[in-house]
Image 1 (tube, rainbow, N blue to C red):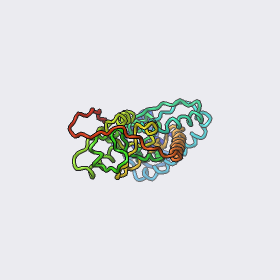
Image 2 (spheres, helix red, strand yellow; image 1 turned 90 degrees about the vertical axis):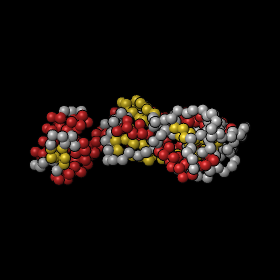
Image 3 (cartoon, helix red, strand yellow; image 1 turned 180 degrees about the vertical axis):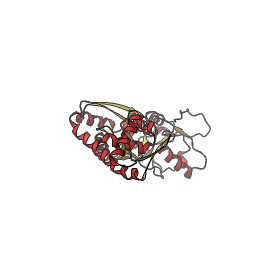
Image 4 (cartoon, rainbow, N blue to C red; image 1 turned 135 degrees about the horizontal axis):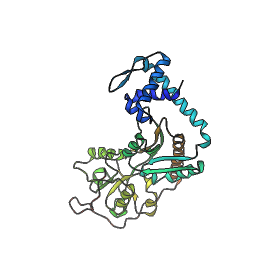
Length: 326
């Protein structure tokens, strides 16, 4: 039995189109048709109902699909095991959100370098929605982000959670008192990019707590968010893990807010049938995230930053304009 023929059968069952299947497997439509015909002849059954535009599974084809998928997965596993001698060489492309870049990603890179010294790594930093697109189009082999990708084609490995807290510059004079969302909304709010999970959570929280629309400034860059808030532009809900230096130096402080912001989940995602090292680097990412969490938990609590001056929010005064993300 030819595993490549079974792989072709599995992809045609998913895509239901000979042209798309040929493109996925980097072959011709004639080759796809020939492989399916060979399988049908070998088993003595008709696997697909064909027309000019699509190919749909017959009842017999549906029964065979589950077995074919298992055989293809076992074949991939066998190939990874026998290729171990060369597994630490070549190129792997990783996509990562900026919140991870600002926290435990350097530790992950150190682990990868130690474990696979000959491996070349290409890193793309972007938002979750764009990283998901990169993985779906096979532009990267592994992504580290906040959202899982559903479907049988993807494997999701939970890594950790980032607690999220409201932070601001000491110049706003918000430390040392209990605040609610309505009070925070009197200041410009700096948010992650529009359509991101944290931004959706923020909008939901504000919609139930604030009567008039809050001024939400969407920023695609975490570094730009941190800079704006540290300069006193407004307030933001950020993971303390990504602003450790700013908290140490006293340019940012954690606020006491009555409404708790949900934690930000982190997950590693790769294709179920992917680069042989994608799953292993995902495990290293979980290790790096866990060690980072333990390090943060062992640090002594920081003293609140000293307030140097108090800023009064203005609903109609001139405010620096922040570029809205997409």
